[in-house]
Length: 116
Length: 109
Image 1 (cartoon, rainbow over the protein chains, first blue to last red):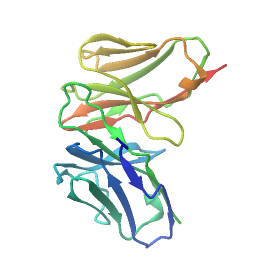
Image 2: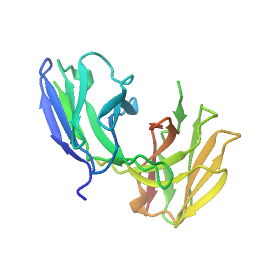
Image 3: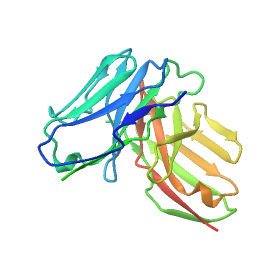
Image 4: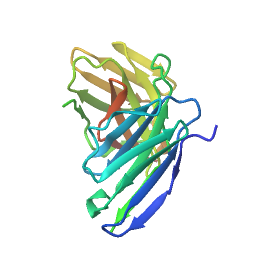
């Protein structure tokens, strides 16, 4: 399996521009998570989906952030308009619907966003 | 709000020594606990998880859990320079993991 695939790996944009981050979870995984990592705040959960349905978006910082999962193999995180404080590494992660054996979250390589 | 606390470090140990990484959590009802390792510029990867009080060993790694004290630790025996990384403690709540900010470990040759 190719693992969780994220794109782009790096994105540099100017304040006010729209940013779209993409994620392909591991096939067969029921849960998909979007995390954001910064030095100051660490790894923060933004939103997660179960079977393509958003379950908890309480971590989404503002209305400028939105996420979708139109099918089991694709999700997007969109920031519109972007601001310099959105600069961070955004990780997508997925897991199967069972915590019994490992409970492991599988992370993608991350998308490093820089907003100038 | 549930919190996971870790000393940010860096924790510096010489090669071959035991590294001890600690984590406390605020929710007494938490059941499962995870240690992830993150190399600079890379994504987190699972080292091990624990859900019963006591010790759990996996190779050079030992996780320790004390639910009464709300305390989780990770011991790394015979530390190697390749162990130099940030170690993230995570607590299972509902269907998600809440992460601490991590402790940076530096193992010097």
